[in-house]
Amino acid sequence: EGVTPIEYMLIKMEVVPPFPPKLSALEARRVYLAAATLWPETMYGQMNSWVFPEGKYGAFEINETEVYIVTERAALNMAYQGLSRVPEKPTCLVELTGHDLIGLPLRSPLASNEIIYCLPMLSVLTDTGTGIVTSVPSDSPDDYMALHDLKSKPALRAKYGVKDEWVLPFEIIPIINHPNFRDNSAEKICTEMKIKSQNERDKLDKAKKEVYKGGFYLGTMIVGEYAGMKVQEAKSLVKTKLLELGQAVIYCE
Ligand code: A2H
Image (cartoon, rainbow, N blue to C red; front, side, top):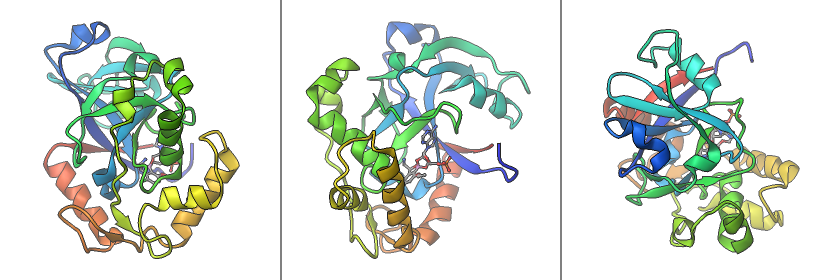
């Protein structure tokens, strides 16, 4: 763990009932996948959420009504930050794996599609954030390649039990005008660098740096309430709005 804590926003991606049998014990509750992000202003471009298929997760009680699905490690940190019904002690209602979460229909704040789905990504770390990642394929090279892999490889979908209708209908929406790439920066850099799959770790790390270097921060919002505004300025406004609406919380680690 670093010395300086990182402040994430946890985006509350609500699991839309009816719940599958694995989650039936949670039927009276509001259940969320809690995705850690540093970029709340990109939530307009969410296309799905990511989990690590072999990862261990749990459904943890946040208060009387709300349950967040995260890793046990994140739940313990959360319990020391007021995000647990019992202070300093996570209460796990159901133990889950990534496989149990794949295919869950979600309603996520600011996403343009009313329902998006939980899908597998192999680079999701279970020792960072919550182990749940929200996917913005327009601006994140990792997200772009992982969704591209699922869209273009039927065998990969079959391997993880991913139905066509969870990925194929989802068209990437440009949300940020980047000074070097115009829009859809992730697709452009991945094509330029001839990245072939989500497994090309070194190339993807370079692609990320390339997107930031040109000023992801200096880009301009092209959708939503803050269209026309610098990404930098929109960031805190989106953050405040999500917190006020109860659609996100702050989480540090
Ligand atoms: B970011 P840091 Cl548009 N495993 O959100 C892998 N990646 C994770 C993760 C985990 N357990 N937890 C969070 N992340 C991702 C949006 C985004 C992000 C965009 C562009 C870049 C970007 C949409 N995905 O991050 O290493 C989350 O994805 C690039 C680094 O903990 C989170 O923000 O600092 C970011 O990594 C946090 O990375």
